[in-house]
Length: 369
Ligand SMILES: Cc1ncc(COP(=O)(O)O)c(C=O)c1O
Image (tube, rainbow, N blue to C red; front, side, top):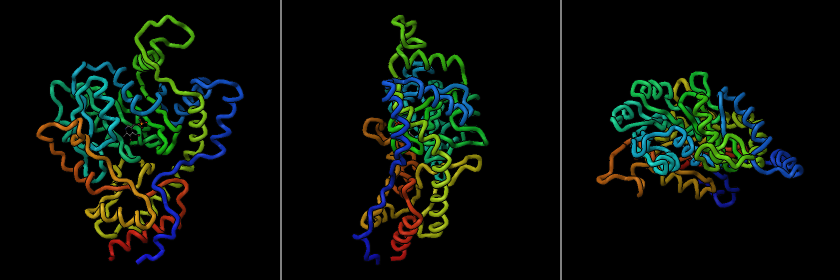
């Protein structure tokens, strides 16, 4: 037994990697008295374009609104169906509901947790207008497979790339495959602006639509003649300044998260029934989380909590959400099993090697009781 359990400092599951670099980054905006989207956002756009090789990029205030903006730009028929994996964050589904679309949920693969292509194809009907594949936990789903199905059925694709900034599939940056893609910069993301998101498109017309929709129906601010309908999806230049600072840290973040991921796997690969997420052979991974499954999830999570180690459970499936479930409820067994058996181990820049050793020891103790 571990009798040090009450005396050890708590290890959090997520923690931000922000410091004086971000503080220094926002100071010039204050000194210049410029707060709304401006020079920092323009610079960040160029940096993101260089890093990802996307043709076009525009910001949104957060990922959920970013998906909503992307759906508005795609101009899909009202009431048409959009296929979304059930194993995702609520915001994916909500963006569709608020855009007057009908989400149709599909299952995922048990090894990669990403969209099941056979189930996706089964769920396509004459009412389907689009697919929203989601790249889960820092890897990219089989996006080439999704694009092939979409092309064959004449469907639009909005990639929910909230969790896959900086991650490539077959050498190509995630989010550059679909018609539009969204990356979230929420506080727990690998690169953060606190809140915020960026949308990619490779299509000039879609880019122009996104620009008009996000800026009150006009291409640039400074005029009160609005040629199109539009809302306000701008960000602030303070957020962009933080984004610029975070982007410089991405190589270091990628390196450390990969080290932590490897350390966990090396230490725990043969421990009880614990299973790590597999990564698609064509996908890179920047571990946004370190997700694992075990039939004893609740007991293990409670054990770790008692040993001052925070964990995080997986998503609750969309097809069972109180406001989204059908009657009788649909069955998507893999999403349900993941939700019951999955949880995430701590991963962030403040985790020391010794923390990983302690976490792994506590887990091994649990399985050898
Ligand atoms: C897969 C996925 N989609 C959408 C979102 C929504 O992004 P945001 O929190 O920036 O609104 C998130 C989460 O943050 C997410 O993980």
